[in-house]
Length: 29
Image (tube, rainbow, N blue to C red):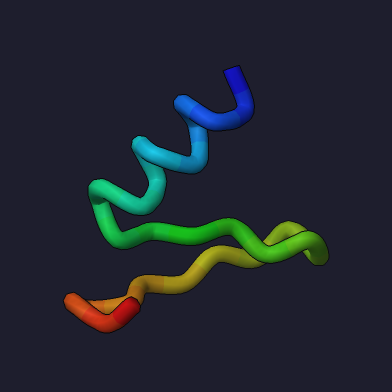
């Protein structure tokens, strides 16, 4: 399930940091 969550976040270019914040990559890896 965690893998699916990471895949979804990566798909929409949105990542969540351990401190609870999130950021957009705007097409960057």
